[in-house]
Image 1 (spheres, rainbow, N blue to C red):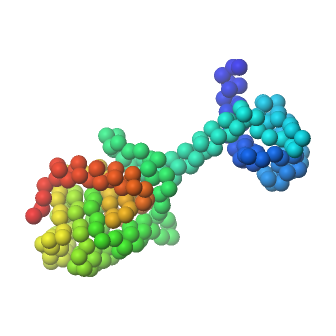
Image 2 (cartoon, rainbow, N blue to C red):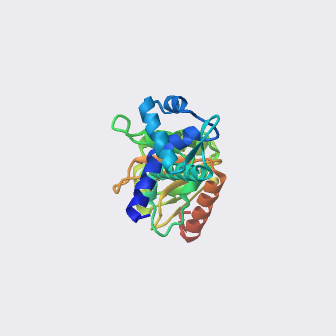
Image 3 (spheres, one colour):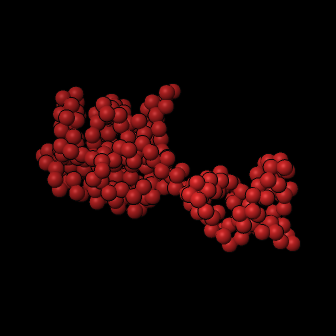
Length: 254
């Protein structure tokens, strides 16, 4: 078969993903397929004719069913669709990561993705604060100056005993100490607070007690454009390992 024909067939398979899904583990006649796909009878007839011609389905006494070949193609199409949807949802994060950071995007397959909108540019920050208020300990990388609303909440949580181990971008900690000298100094003197600086932090990341989150920022930083978080234990382990790597290279503040 010519290469162009292969490409056309593959594109057709992808376009008919819902048809493979409809036939999964069941027999269907033309009327039932039309109802499943919410299409007209003539359209269902054309689909069935095409699938028969390509040996994706076969006719039985109970209707049409996927052939073994059709089942394999159907599974491949579903897998492709899931992978594309998964990668697309993480596009901003994938494009943010430095090339030298090992990252398995599948670890964030079930992640909650909170993006800023025109009407609510602080949605990602609000999601971060929601998680921050529920945890008893955090560790991570701070690459941007945080909004005042977070500073007050952070101060309250640290005063209440929140275990905190943060690696700062030098410019960020300088700005925090300049803008909030009393709060920052008091927080950094707490026994349950550890802070260090690193000149080349790869991402904005926080490992909570039972969750990991990554912030996606603009080049000018500030509030995140997106916040992506998951409770996947393997993702948390990845974050822990990345944190320890940079912690060993960082310079302690106190």
